[in-house]
Length: 284
Image (cartoon, rainbow, N blue to C red; front, side, top):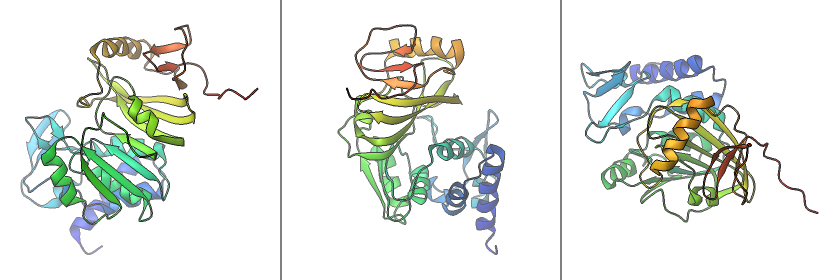
């Protein structure tokens, strides 16, 4: 490649795939294509890496193509997200071309653009952001992707149009009914499940029936809180559950009425992360 910025972007994408053992050509292509500099404002930029903060030496976009957080608003603790974390989890999510995607907490839109590349020109991404200024920035930055519509709204509130994929970019203590209701059959939800203290985890849900979802909890993550998707009491119980086994035994999310029992990993009001397999009941 003759363009040094494009070369840096491609090398960055290759490194994200290499360190995460990602074999998906779609993930490689998306991270190689989307210019991160469109979404982080003018440089120099504050970068968070390895527990330290530093400013780039210049406004050269090549400085952005590293596996580091780019600060968007230090006062609000907002950043552009860890590329390796999102590359890994989006590869597991396995977005298909033509999918209808709901992205909640889109920030300035970088990962909305990645999702747009994954679903392609015949797909659709609805990017929702509660912060009006960030939504305005995202709307401008995402203009090259006509399949993306940016909405200034509260992502904790519904109803939402039916979606094949829902991606949430801030931490919740539990899945919200509005998110679950929007999932199509076999639709997938990815969200950070985070407690009141300590690390959280990423939750993957796949709808199997009206009240049953296959579930997997994976990894250790830290995220800012998703406003409207947190209850302190649940967060305390979640912290204890994660400390016990990091969610290794979770296999389903049940939304049917049942008494708490030994199969319940984290039992809530109208939902339960369960150790039972997600096997829909057969009609009589």
